Length: 397
Image 1 (cartoon, one colour):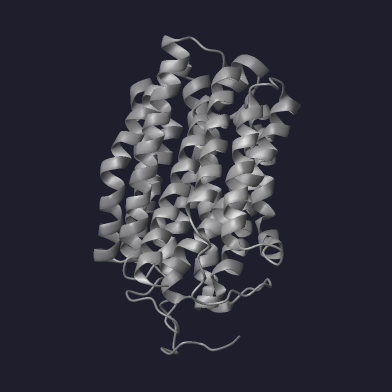
Image 2: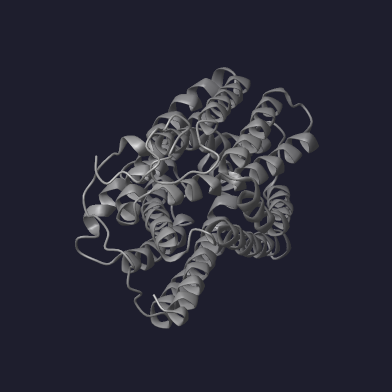
């Protein structure tokens, strides 16, 4: 890829991330209040919904077969379109099964995009630039999320518009941006042809374990952390939106710094810092009785999760170039094995004891800490984990 197309490719990655952040942020910030106020959801219902939402993520491995029919870049754009359509439809179906249906449409677009976007990012970026660029993209995404949350607060609190109108507005804007994205950028050629079959490699095993545990922790956070604020502390949509605004504002400043920190200290140390912090945060969720402290924990949770880009850059350093697309598909499925099971299972646990849910999250974070310390100081092909003996790239397995 020449220098001009390399710059355009980076801009395309940023634009796609902006669309994703805008549309998904609005869906996400209103979800808990919409589910409770319009669809009368309980914790168990929310667990059911989130399990259905994660089902397309569990099936993300099928993306490698879709790539037999279309290019990665085309699939990424179409996935953003499908995401926007799902969000557009959300407000029109205020019932448990209606919300499950629209969430499935949204989720197919979301997870296929995240799968392909991860692959394209690792293919289009030089290894030396990846951590800083990923941190920068996270900063841009946070800024757009900040604008989205501000818009939700304005539309819901000041203008007092109904959920259906807000979801419709953002869905239409998302579709328009996707069309503009498709027309604005050319098709970029991959530097290395990608394998179009499914496989697992032993030397990627630490990456697989970290990915699985990340999915388990993320589900506990996404499903139950915000729900805790709404159910236990009676946060209104306006208050939740303000909290999300503060959270995104912090990410705008900190996310780019995280990318630079990872470049400086390496993936093993960065992930260790993240997991120690998350253990403390999850235990805090289990014990908290103060609404303001709970909000502070939520913000810290997001900031620590931003360091998870080190998992991607670790994989980029150890992987064969032709493995990016297929491994991105497989890793998303691994990520979502726990994601399909945890929401519905822990939804039932929640009905008995919300604290147990968060203690389990701390346990997953502790296991992640152990796994992260299997990463060598200088990961590369042939030196994928601390007990690697062959320091040269493994040609085949």
